[in-house]
Length: 381
Image: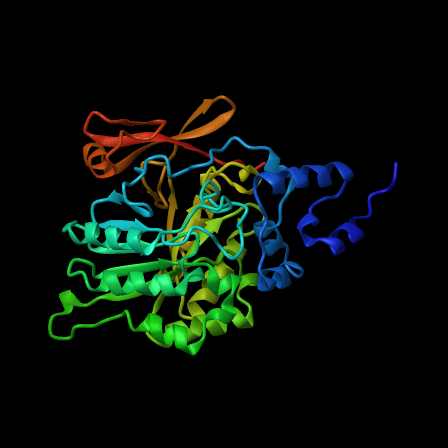
């Protein structure tokens, strides 16, 4: 049998980097057919230098093994009558104007949307969504997410113009990873335009409106000069950047790596906001630690400056669960899965009323009316 030349394979196509045998290469081809691969020039440049970047973006033979679901955290959401609009909580809505991303993360919990050529919201969809949001008087916040909304800037600005005209919407967040994937798009013109949506009202501060950007950095290798410069262009104009890190095996699952990342973020005016446990999306098992591993890291973070302590959460389909330094977990074993049983803070009847749907799979209503459910834990072996 012809020997396997790893160097030649990797040089020909970086996407085959994790193929060490002919069998691996065949499996990676299967993985790419099921979960497409997409890189930007900047990500490809970083991936050639950093294993932490490669593990996030390049297909791996272990992706073919999965106990997860295509729609973790998505199963409790109503397929809205208005395309691209979702509401799960009383005080905020989620809007997805663009369903594609510049590059595909292998652990993305929206694999059933991203990577699948989903149609984007039309202007008519946006107009319908904004009209409905204007009638939701309990809603004060809007999260514009994706995909990545900054892939269609003209449509994003149209949506922002409409939202800031609503009297009930005062808090707008834009979720984007373009600061990492395509930092060159953050021109002075773009940053000035985004900053214009933060509208203070000095006489009546309760009527002030702001725009923040939820960014996504998982490792300090991502903080290249181009990325830091793009972030500064935003923060220097008064835009808040809040970072959402995902805990990933072999990438940042150590006290040293996570502390280093958060310290670098703080020094560059980026708030460590969430440390998310990697959701049980299909194909991501090899990147998922246990929740306990995250808690061990979190306990150490709690001994450092309070500014560097994010919220540590894991997310069953019924809603986010905040982990504290004294949290204890109740485990059950089922079908070779480690399940964490949890009682959430959310009211089951309110959830069903807002979502217009019954509770998601593996969830039920407790005796006192709260949501209880199971979360598929990761493994540390």
